[in-house]
Image (cartoon, rainbow, N blue to C red):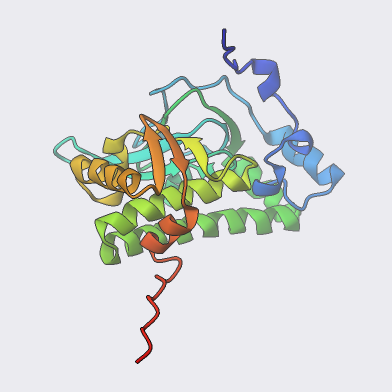
Length: 252
């Protein structure tokens, strides 16, 4: 009988200095005393369950959040009630930056699975980052990464074929999970094909067709949400990260 790993609250209440995501998160580069000061302002609420919302549009902006475990999707809702997915957030990534400029959140943040977060009250974080240079630098670094991710998405939507978009999406998830110490070639996609299509600006049928094509070409194996990348270089070539190999010309 297989055992299921259960997230327990005491496991979540781990100090920043002992967190496995330390190198990816705000504590990066801080010394012992600075870590203690950061840890004093961090709140660690109970885990979110699948489909539970962290915040809604127009909620007053009070905090940034760092995904501790699990995953979160963010999306806006159009005037017709349709969703537009704006991001998928994995452990170590910031959520809530959409509220900084207007003092209210502009999108919905929803758990894709059982998810724990660290809550960072923004006023306290802002005050502390003004006192700890390394914290301020790391906060700016994480915010910059979010901007770069948005720019890359615009590039995907504007320049890439449907095949290349899906390949680039798989590579993004692969690289981000590898940074966190997980396998780069075997993982579960916690988001639905519909969410992926919405995020990439494609119909869900097109997304499913690309997954099928990748399987037929032996680039991946896919079973529901489980993905195994068999030919990582092949996926990179499709995405445009690696140039296609030219066929050698026959000698005259």
